[in-house]
Length: 361
Image 1 (spheres, rainbow, N blue to C red):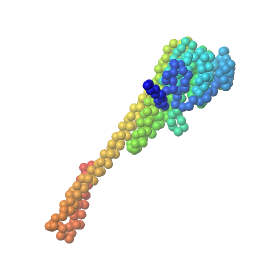
Image 2: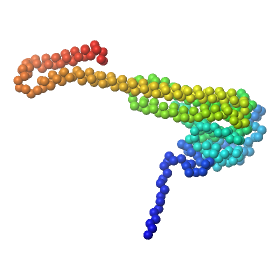
Image 3: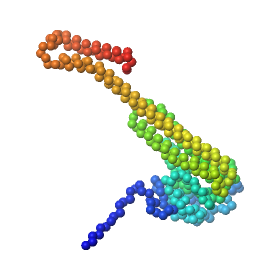
Image 4: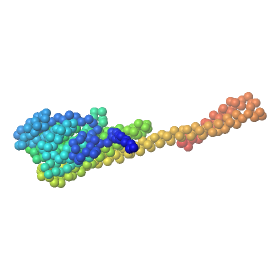
């Protein structure tokens, strides 16, 4: 008789990615937060006109695209994969690119396709309480269209929107590639704001490194070093990505943006060097703090050793007169007890004076 057993598949661990086992190019959101609902907006402009509009559906958005203008389409929220797929189909975006847009854990990178350039990087924001917030920004650059995908609403691109609205600078006179550069530039500029915040924390740690010998301080330094490592992992690929753009292997990049990309590349190198400096300083602060803890422990041990040394002869005297022998001549003397106390005090004082002259404390 054949016995059949029912097989129950084990529960999938929570840390397993949702796209494992799916075909390449599957539109699945991967991130640490719950995705927000998709909100669509478009800014269309040229040297003479500027319009800002919102759209409820992809079809409504497509109707707002002007062929004779530069169109900046902003997608806030990554919840509606069906909406994102329609946008990808309309503009000929590869399914693998859409997969990278939805995977917010990807390494920042740049990919050059035949009809568009894809770039993804992290926006890092300093929170009011001093912490850092990370958000992936994905850009798809086409001839007259720039599409930006953000995880949630809210960014620091308002200066660029104001420049477009007020016709300030050359941003409305150039193409979508210059607009893409402007977005990258403001993200990198904000990295310097992050560096200033980290620098303030470094200064605070330097002041506290000698006095604060608690375990909490060591934990703060370790978390700070981990934060630096995380930022380095996000900044270093940006340097490589800009280097790819500087080679201008796509006709979508005009000679106009070439000097600006070089300047942007130099800024990213400066940010990276600052991060390396902060890592060295954090390691030095941790070493100073550990030395301070060690020195304080040595001071405590020195005091305890001096106390123990002083009590060695006193313990000897007390031990001698604590013996239960019957015939001890000093036991019958009237002043033996106060004399013994005086002698012990004299020994302790002499030893303290000797230690003081030797500068042992």
